[in-house]
Length: 170
Image (cartoon, rainbow, N blue to C red; front, side, top):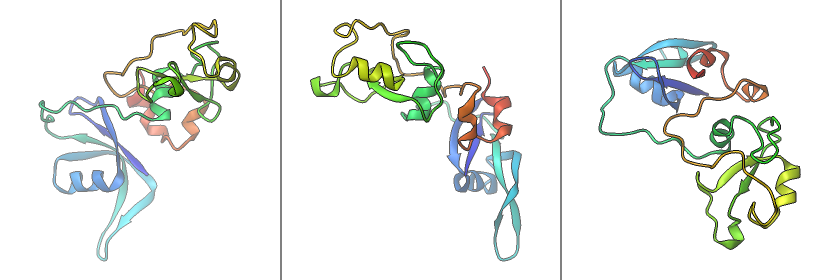
């Protein structure tokens, strides 16, 4: 189970393991905004509700910019859950990574070279560049500056707590 970590101004900072959230809470650096009602963290003498959303009590250190972790979920959120070639809506389980510059030709697995595509478009493009396959990207892939906002849709069922929606909306 993960916990959504918010800045002092209630903006999403990152998703952290519940153990990290408990450590921050016990040290007084964060306050619990919402907890999982059905889960508890127990010690021999105490039981605490497992935090779902926590917020920094004081401002974060400005020297360190949080980087968005590269993952299928983050790329799916960046691309708004749409195939970057035909623009159909995709659930996370239906989406595939497509390397704009194929890996066999030196393309890296990075924010600037990976997009979400449906299986049909990914197979059609194959081991070619979009230009060679006569396909157009709907948007140029780039690294997001902050935590991508998940799109409403079927992928909320993949463990994203309902309470997070309020904070992850654009």
